[in-house]
Length: 77
Image (cartoon, rainbow, N blue to C red; front, side, top):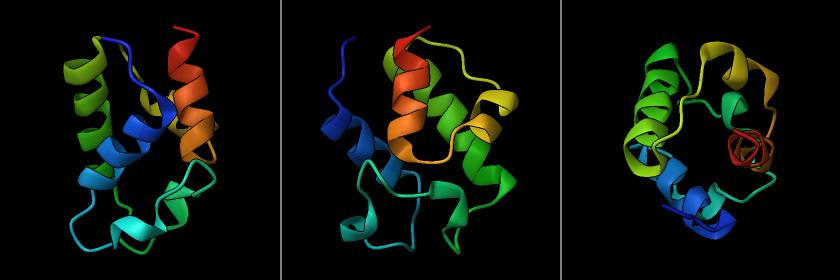
């Protein structure tokens, strides 16, 4: 499935229960959010696999700073 950056931002926001959706933009540093945890990372990896049929690793998450970075990385796969 092809997903726009805006759709991807919304999907990432959906993996966070307590952070208001308004805080999520392509420039959001998702690992800097108070709610970020290793469980959040696993949820994002799972969401990318299910929604985009792409494989993302923990190293991929560590290398991405913003949601936009992660989107670009996934698009290269």
